[in-house]
Length: 138
Image (cartoon, rainbow, N blue to C red):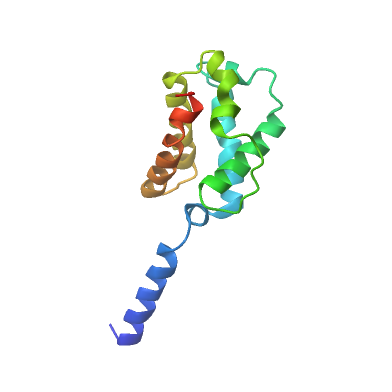
């Protein structure tokens, strides 16, 4: 390998290593596709679908896309409540770790369905997991 090839490979590695998870997953198009698939899974799951009864899903989907964009390191368009306040009514309705685990399951399955690499799925899961205590009001 020539010196220029080594430098180019190092530069390519550096450029890739500096990308956000949002960029590595594919940006806006990937988040949009993921959220659409994710909510199809969630709404089809009897363990958790009842938490969305009466919810304006168009608004919910838009909020989730904005939140994941922000959480994954993309532009900040999120204007919703923080996780604790946004889920407090669900905690009062019985939201618990079992439900959170189901959501995590669907997030992983969604990213797998979109052929995201395992390391990126793990990063996304870690970010989602970091919200557990706030979502569950602890």
